[in-house]
Image 1 (cartoon, one colour):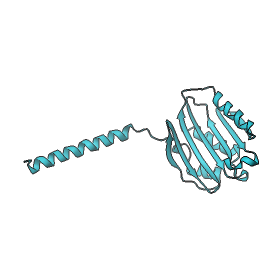
Image 2 (image 1 turned 180 degrees about the horizontal axis):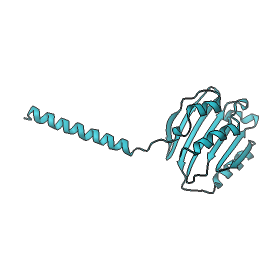
Image 3 (image 1 turned 60 degrees about the vertical axis):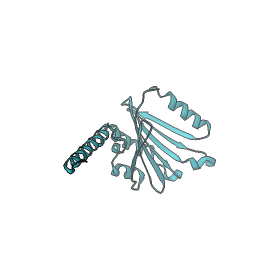
Image 4 (image 1 turned 90 degrees about the vertical axis):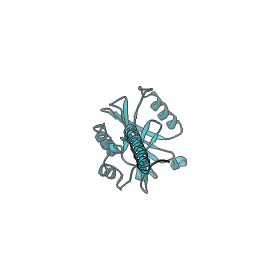
Length: 170
């Protein structure tokens, strides 16, 4: 028979071991930096309305996303270990141009921004504005806003201003 004081001692030890395991597990979990790339006011200024962001991930890519009535927002933060040249992005741009999407790309000072306006028959895919901070390779940060209508698109210049602030945060 186990004495009550010994049972309490074993239980206390088990609680300490579990607490330490949880603490170590939490300490090793990577912090999602994607949501910290922009402030609520910066995002609201670009979108014209408030959005609540939720952290997530896609493989090794840290994400932060949210939605308003007129647009979806996705922030991505990742380390690129392949294709630092950007050839994959260029191939993607070429592919959507072949589908009839009107694409405008501007690059300067380590930030590439792009807008995409689909043809009328593909309007359901959304109207996108994206800016990617490329000047801190191998780390990259992306802000992507997909509007439901062309009139709700975020202008490239407005999103670029947000991307410039993002670049200072990593």
